[in-house]
Structures are given as C-alpha cells and as structure tokens.
Length: 73
Image (cartoon, rainbow, N blue to C red; front, side, top):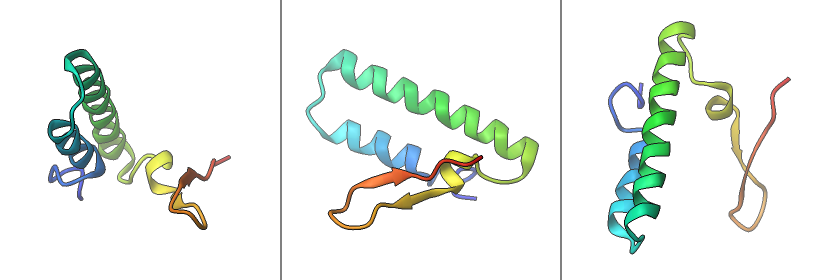
C-alpha cells in the first residue's frame, strides 16, 4: 500500500538525496535507479498482489544498525 500511495522507501531515499550534497550526476543516477526500481516494484505488485521478495523479506541485521537482506529460495 505504501508503494501505491508513494510513501515507500524509494520515495524516502529520493527525498534524502534531494537534501544531501551529492553532485549532479551522482544524484541523477541514484534517483533514476530508484525510479526504475519503483516501476519494477509497482509492476510486480500489480501482477502478484504483494511486495517483491527483496522488499517483503528484508530484515534489520542484528546489532550495530546495519541491514541485510534475507535471500529467498
């Protein structure tokens, strides 16, 4: 639902990019990658009715605030 309402992690990261001192092409590349992933994610949701596995199965890593993805399959 967050993706469909543009309140997802992709939009949050894009907002951060707008507020930090990335230089032109770095910011443009990062934001384009986010737009591409958001489109892919929306298409997946439309087809399967749930988040992509890499989003759905994401977990916080234990300790030190780092993150890791749990691999499916």
